[in-house]
Amino acid sequence: MLIYLALLGTICTITFLWRRRRNSIAHIPGPPSDSWLLGHLRQLGLTPTGEVQLHWRRTYGNVVRFRGPFGQDRLLISDPKALQYIFNTSAYSFQKPEDVREILRIFNGPDLVWSEGEVHKRQRKAMLPAFGGPEARALFPIFQSVIERLTDRWEKILNSTPDAKSANVDINRWLSRATLDAIGEAAFDYTFGTLDDVETELGKAYNNIIADASGDRAHASRIIFDGIISYMPPSFISFLFARLKSKRLVRVRETKAVTNRVAKKLIDAKAQQVQAGHTGKDVLSLLVKANLSEAANRRLSEEELYAEMSIILFAGHETTSTSLTWTLWELARRPDVQNRLRHEVTEAYARVRSEGQENLSLGDLEKMPYFQAVIKESMRYHPAVWQIDRVAVKDVVLPLSKPIQSTTGEVITSLFLPRGTRLTAAIGVYNRPVALLWGKDANEFNPERWMQEFDSEKANRISLGVVGNLMNFSSGTRSCIGWRFAMAEMQAFLAELIRTFEYSIDPKKQIRKEGDGVVFAVVVGEEDQGSLLPLRISRVARD
Image (cartoon, rainbow, N blue to C red; front, side, top):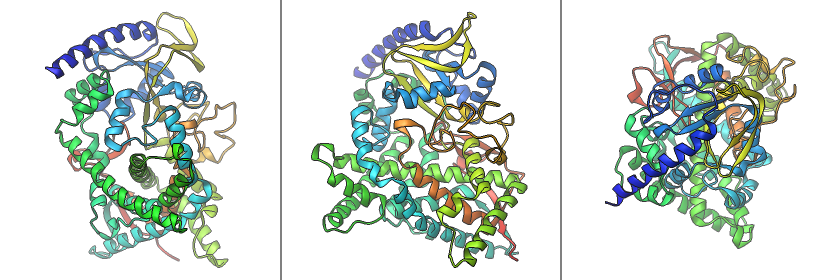
């Protein structure tokens, strides 16, 4: 009876809010929807990630009205000035929708991604000392050590083939294992051992977690369910999720339980070490030390520390491996880019070796123009996170960099959004507009754009993000706290991978983008295998 009453109340709420919001943003142009029940979400789920949204932008512009479940009007925003206002100027006026926040809390706990307002400020202040530039550089040798273990494994795979020259490998799963090992050692001083086929409970829990937790985003029942809970109070969502037995939720609960068990052991051990005057360089040691030095009312609670460990694992593991996977895929498709990049890395490596330096430093890599161009172009073209959902928590007027024309013919230079308006910040779409931001060939993968007079920080550009005016790490007060960590890891991995192996695609395999959170690769016809991207590798010929 309780569930039926809640559903009835939800339907009434939906009807009221739908009428109010429809009147306020109904004049914004957007695609027609043939389903009041499902809106455009089924169409978005049935097509490769980003395909429909890019088409909408080309057709309707930087602000597009689309439909969620039950006829709910939503906005897809890629206008740079609007995004700057949402994430930089007035970040706390745009928060995660309550249902999204509650699901994040259920999955991970009260972490930095979940928190808002004063709680977010307190958590971020407590965590910042562990994520500075010097701290990320200190971990660079760990990343190099891990990627060398991965290349050793690939060497063994090559040696086991009949010709000992080339082999097909699933780039995504190997990189996922490597980044999990790297995050374990660098962030927690914890050995997952996945590259050495060691099975730990935490390593097993995080294996293929993104694909397993994503589910079928095009299934009508999921769209309807997501639509219903978007109008439910967080307490009822928590009550409901605790009783649901879906495979996806069971998987997430098990992962959270394992993470909390391991987190308690690690945090207790780190606290004892810090109190004894021994602080490691890993992120967790620095975090525990910084937290203990805070006043009691500013510290992270035990539950928050567990949650922060969980989100560091999740965000620092799959997003980095996904970014590297798409980078290698682009290089495999473009031998000219791959060869030029390898030449630059190999020359730099030879130079530092001749000077008595054993390996490339992070500083060496940051001075290599084509290497940096490839990294940024891959981030631009293949953001690991395609979009971020927000809701206006008060009435706001959203500025626009380019006027839009309403369905009634009115020219709009700023947009009134009533409290409760739900919007999608389209990172992947923002990364693609032609001319003003990224050049006339913005829909092509071209690292050269980062080496020409074109400069993403100039030409009256609106400042966004933390790297190259890209929003891959979000922006402003909600920017990813671990972005320096991720950039150092990506650079260490890519330099060794391109120096050691050549990559080519399998023309028989069609790759498709999936996921509305982290964007992962699947092979068409092999979707049941989860995240998968096979490439053919061979050794680089040495002089």
